[in-house]
Structure formats: C-alpha cells, structure tokens
Image (cartoon, rainbow, N blue to C red):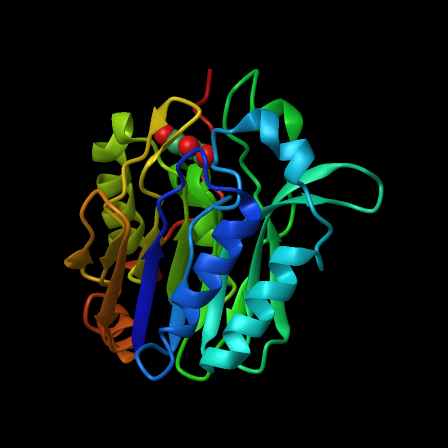
Length: 265
Ligand SMILES: O=C(O)CCC(=O)C(=O)O
C-alpha cells in the first residue's frame, strides 16, 4: 500500500479559497501514485489562527468537503482530508476531520476530542468530540485522531480495541515542540503495534512557526519516512500485514491488565 502525506505550507496571505484549489490539485497529482492521501489539520485557516475559525467555519458538506470529495474521486484515492473548522447546525464549532473513499463518498467525519489551548484558543472556541472513529479500507483499518490527541494514549488504545491498524494523525504542530511530535508518533506506534501516519503543516501563521517533519512510523517503531520543514509530499510504501505479524511475534497487547485498583490509603 502506498500513502502520500501532503505537508501543506499554511502561511498568511493565502486565502482559504486559493489554498483549497492548490491542495485539490496536489491531491489529483497523487492519481496512480498513492492509495491513501493524508492532509494536515485545519489547513484552510491554520491551527493557530484562532480569530479566523468563526469566519472560515463551514458546514460539514461545505466548500472544503465539496472540493476534497471531487479531488478524491478524480485521483481515485482514499483521502483523509485533514480537518476543517466545522459549523454545526446548532451553531457550535468543531475541529472536524473528513475521510473520503475513492469514489468521493464521505466515509467518516471525526470531531477532535482533545482541544488545544488550555484556557484559550481552540479549547474555548470549539466543542469537543466524543466519538472514536475508524474507517475500513480494503487493506487496513484506519483509526483517526487529530494533533493534540497524540498526547492521550488512551484514545489510541480505544482505536486499537475498535480494530485500528493504521493510526492517521493530521496536525498543525508547532516547531517549538517538534521533539514531542516525533517521540509521541513513535510511542503511539510501538505501544499499539500499529502504523502511524502523522501529517503536519509547514510555514508560519499567527506568529507560530510550524514543525513540518510529517512522519510515518511502522509497528516496530521504526521511522519509514520523515519530511523536512517545508511544503512537501511524503510518499511511502508500507505493508499493512506487518501489524498482524508484529502483534503475533511480540504479543505484548495480549498482556494488558485492565481495571487496576487505585492505591489503598
Ligand atoms: O500538543 C501540542 O504540543 C500541539 C497541539 C496543537 O498544536 C493542536 O492540537 O493544535
């Protein structure tokens, strides 16, 4: 199976509309190259452009949905289209990822569960998702998570329990914490014996330089491919069957002990 992670430069001065056109064309270029294409988090606005979330928010089936559904079917690829600022019917905002099949049907929508910013930014502007999401592809089952979610291993264990073998993480991770990004992507792969496809952004927006360095990690924790800091398409070939063989040959997941008792006082 071949996957291409499109590490988009999300700089100021590029409108959401023009970026949508540019990204759709990059997705189309993957026809015959990749089976699965992955885009980053909130690439129409930038993950840190908090003041743009409301203005650029769109319904689930808004302009980004339309452009990406068409790009997926034109290219004949599975497309994890990263996330959009979603305006829900009740007016609430969510950081929502969209996944499309090669015929351009929406296969899944995932509302980010852990919102970043502590007492400001996304954490106060957006609602929190509650539902884990997996997507069955012919070759593998995707488990989806978004950016800050990468810090919460229990979410990934939930995805693995639901059958995920390839963990896909679109992000807008800042350069300042790039070491955490790489470390956590490898940790999630090792502990879950799964592939991790983590696609970040490049460029600078809202004064926050982005880390780039999108990364693909195998179920043994080895880095199969890693991007540099700038805009880049990172293409990697991987064998989804390695999840089953790794879990058979080193069956640590079977040794989980659930329901531990808290310390006695
Ligand atoms: O956890 C981090 O360091 C970055 C998270 C983030 O930027 C986000 O979720 O948008």
